[in-house]
Image 1 (cartoon, rainbow, N blue to C red):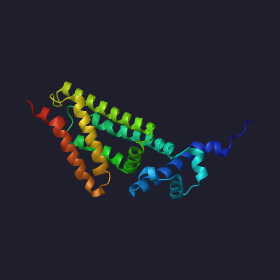
Image 2: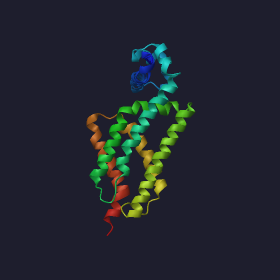
Image 3: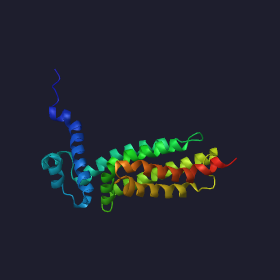
Image 4: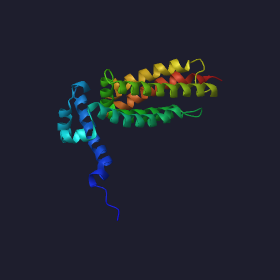
Length: 212
């Protein structure tokens, strides 16, 4: 008979996910309260999460590894949420764009504090900094390609410089998420989504659609 694996080993991946979730919630709480990630200690995090320091160190060597692990999960969610926008084509409407922007905002908002913590730690954590730069470059490239595709198809303003336009839009959208939609009340979000959708529609799609 094959011996049964120890219970602790069998449950380790699931337990790690559970512990990570508790600790990431703790990070989001303290950052939302006004503390920077650099000020937060492991002792503070485990106290809020309701776990012991020894349990923390079973799964993470330090709070930087914890943050990097959580940030990867957020990145995957964000990449998925943006695909609806990049799928817009010649027959798409402003409402289609609005729906796509709303999806991005809906995914981003719950993680605003965690993303802020990643930005905070990027000044001294080279792994986080490189990952953030990689995310920005990925989004910039996807949007530039979308603009080029639309220009080739005649449904995006042909006078726009794809990469430069994408750079401005990505920078503005990221700042807007952090300063506007992230901290906004739920009742304020629809108007903010409408404003961003109107801005993007006018800048990218409207001119081409007015041409005969």
